[in-house]
Amino acid sequence: MARTVAWIAEGKRATTWALGSLGQAVLDALSDIGGLAIFALEILVQVFRPPYRVRNFLVACESIGTGSIAVVVLTAAFTGGVFSMQTTIAFELFNSESLVGAAVALSLTRELAPVLTGLMVTGRAGSAIATELGSMRVTEQIDAMATMAVNPFHYLLVPRVLAALVTLPLLTMIFDVVGIAGAFLVAVGLQGIGTAEFWSRVHLWVDLADVFGGLIKAAAFGLVISITSCYKGFNAAGGAKGVGVATTQAVVTSSVLIFVLDYALTTLMLGWWQAF
Amino acid sequence: MSAMIDIRDLHKSFGDNEVLRGVNLKVEEGTTVVILGSSGSGKSVLLKHIIGLLEPDSGAVYVDGEDICRLSPRELSGFRSKFGMVFQSSALFDSMTVFDNVAFPLIEHREGRSDDQIREIVESKLALVSLEKAAHLYPAELSGGMRKRVALARAVARDPKIVLYDEPTTGLDPITTDSVNDMIEDARRELGVTSVVISHDIGSALRIADYVAVLYEGRIIECSTPEQLRHTTHPHVRAFLQTWFQRS
Image 1 (spheres, rainbow over the protein chains, first blue to last red):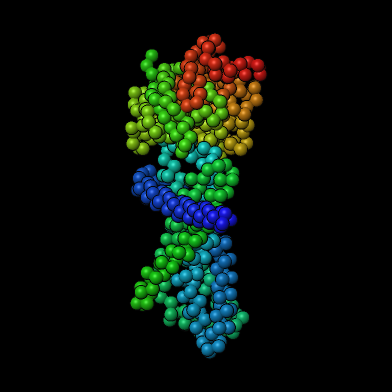
Image 2 (image 1 turned 45 degrees about the vertical axis):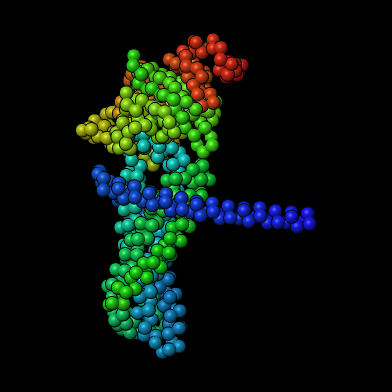
């Protein structure tokens, strides 16, 4: 009897602990979402306030955009190549190899180019933004800036967010071109598909709306990556370890948000794409 | 003399931790006040309230007659031009040279200055801290003492009325500590600034302060001249001083 009472008490304690932990996790997540929203709003307000920091913007473009070109080109070339190889094998089953070019180009422009570019930029530039801002936070450089009557949102964050908004679509265009070129080389050079066959189907099936849809997604990913990375880095605390945690959270959160946002945007754009 | 800084019944808690429990302190214009206290006593929290980096739970901080707790973020940002602050870690921008660090507040608030005028001001401020030849170096290439001096040059670049120092001598060797103390005295003498220094270094406090305020358990328990402090009857302050006298 006594043992049964003890089990029940233990069960109650475990349930209370589990519900408490779950509740705390939900509260933390809601607090994070709210904090991120207020943070994004503050950045938006600062975007329209002069002075407009063109130099800081160009430096951020160089860091986020130019610095990511090499990794985007490599990723695009191999993604296009391998995608071409796999679709050729699959399409041969239906004697539809001629559609390889169209299938690869549509997949790249609508989905793969913006998503993979977003993930590459997250790994390369998002982590760098979070680390740099986190390091400035824990060494009091951001506080120092505030004491000099310089708004850190205006000086540090706005140029980075605008740079990501502009450079992500540009990088995605590079991804589109290099990815399709990679697919072409593999399809024509290795799989024996004719050049005219490849390009005629691309021309037939791929519209400007497909490319623009991908670029809109890329711009949205640019905002998500930069705001999330700035938020995590700006609020880093606890020395070197805190900077590491902030960087990890920035990369993980940005990556997950890219996939969630991609699903939402695809759902919204499907009607538009199908109209063409 | 009028009070440049007047802190009234300041309270601040972080969660359950009540850090400031009714701080009252007046700092007269042109004087140097050192706020002494052991580690974790809330000295840095108090300093961040003076410059508006933290908002109090209750109480007021008057600076030059204005309650900074009632200012909007924009007004506060403009009001901070009255201040210069030297951080414990110096907080120099590590991606900029020494010259650019000192020029930063001047470029951000040009107030009609030309590039040549800014260069002249930066050179004169670096001369004040004897670092004219280090202008092209990056913070990572400087010693701890040099960084503190650059931080002071940057803090006084716009000729503020008040300079705040957060633990300026912590972690420095005795010779560098002396040179930093000289630098604080020079800034007061040559620029006529009001200085508030946060420290737990009693030796430096007795040397540079016009008044020493002792922060204990969230309150100022003593505020007197260095000479009066040596003869204090407050048991905690006596214990604090005795520990230092025995060590030295």
